[in-house]
Image 1 (cartoon, rainbow, N blue to C red):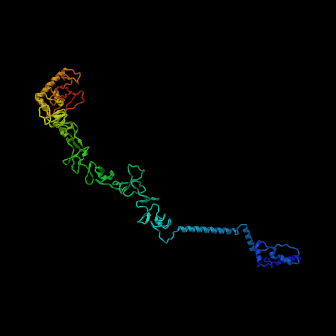
Image 2 (cartoon, rainbow, N blue to C red; image 1 turned 135 degrees about the vertical axis):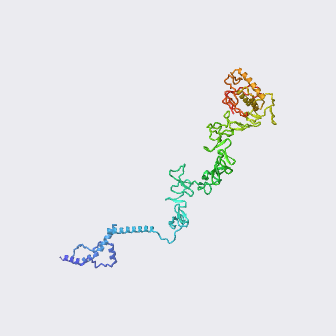
Amino acid sequence: MSGLHSAASHRTLVHPNAVSPTVDHNDPLFSQGASLRDPWTASINDIGISKVLDNDGDVQEHTVMQVEIENEPLMQQAKRSELASKNALLTQRWQTILVVTVVLTALAAGIGGLGYWISIPKVITQPFLLYGASCYMNSRSCDATRFLWCPAGTCVCTGNYQWNVTAQNCSCGVYQKWTGFKCQDYGYYGDPCNSVPCQPTLTCMQVINQTYTTSQDICVCDSVTYLETVGVNSGTCVSQLTYNASCLTNSDCKSALGLSCANVGGILQCQCSSTAYWNGSYCSSNALGGQPCSVSVPCDTKRGLTCTAGICECDSYSYWDNVTTEWCQEKKTYAIGCQYSFQCNTTVNLSCPSTPTGCDCPTASSAGMCDCASTTFWDGQRCSARHSFNGTCPGQYACTANLVCYLGHCICPGNMHQPDNVQFVTMSSQSRHVYTREERTILEASFACQSHPNIMEKERLAKLLNCNIIQISNWFQNHRRRMKKQNKSTLSNISTSIHTVSTDSPMYQPPCAYHQSQCAYNINADNSSYYYYYHPPTSQYIYSHEPVYMQTTYFDPLVTYEQ
């Protein structure tokens, strides 16, 4: 009991928070030793139990006692040391979550604030720079509200904007339009103009007969301008040129005035057409038939008109058709339909009768032809003047009355004097006359009508052939003799033999009175000329080219002689 009591008394002597009285807490050795020991363990020596037991003389045995020491701060410190050695958190879970939340919130607030600061306009104490001013590359010192920026040390317009001096900002040019991507130039000649207007002087319209996209308009010149291709105005539409101005194409001239580009002496100029003249204001049509004319108002020569005594007229062989063609038409010949007498060939006395027979002579004509005057002959189209000495002649009718047609030329007959330096054969009235082919044709034509001509026929032939009546009578007598001999010969070789056309022959033409229609020739009323033509012959005349009529001739009945 005493031992237990002693032990109990000893336990009560020591306060839970007491330390050994023999230990000096200010002793540095104690502090150092305590700091070197495990923070959560305490030895018997630390609490002075060994000294207490040494002073206890009553208890001789060793007793091990468990002592619980309640020191909260020391316990927490020991626990932190244990966690630190295990690399574990020293804080509670809720503390960690709270700290992380606060940090993230602060970070988000900082980023948002920075973005807001960047987005809001900054107050700059210096004014923005304008176009052309020096600046720091890629700086914001150029006035962006005017679409300026600094790409390389100078404030310039963005994109393809241009600096507008008047408006003091960057914008599209005068003849440009913003398409949403860039400043598009106005259309030039031939460019599409559906979305962008045309340059000044050009018109946006659809052009006919040109290959362009369907329903796409293009820039062209209007009707009073043309495209200039040279000079400072090249590519623009300028006003069309007026009379006598130099040009390159027809579109250069004012077509509304009737002008076109024509070559005048090697120079291209705006001129009127060949059927018009310039009246000072525009091209006026040349005067037509029956209209007044002058040097300044010419006649339309392309229509066959000439200015005669101040009036446009056709020539003497044409008439002005003002009903259908408005051209000079050739005058109508015999039996051609007509409405007015001026349509007929008045040079041969044709007129238009009231009966619908066509152009006709005022008096009856033996062969449907109007007689020419004694000084003219019918050349196939009109009455022409007879040829003088040494002139060419198709027949005796083409020579004047005192000449004969010999070998295609008008010469003097044998019983007349020749002009100076002209030689011909002189023949007396009793000598044989030299007959040309045309003269023989005339005599044979007369013989076919009457083999025994009367005195009037002989006088007519003598006057026509420039010989005397005796020579005419001799020819008829000799020709009757030859024809009589021919009646006795055979007709086997008609082209080389000489035949006689008897009254029983089918080629015989009966005698006829003067101007009868069955005669194979026609003689003018004044006994002056004969006209004849050939059908496609079945045989040819056998004419002699000898100067003296020594050879007989075959008269072809298929040859028709007309005036």
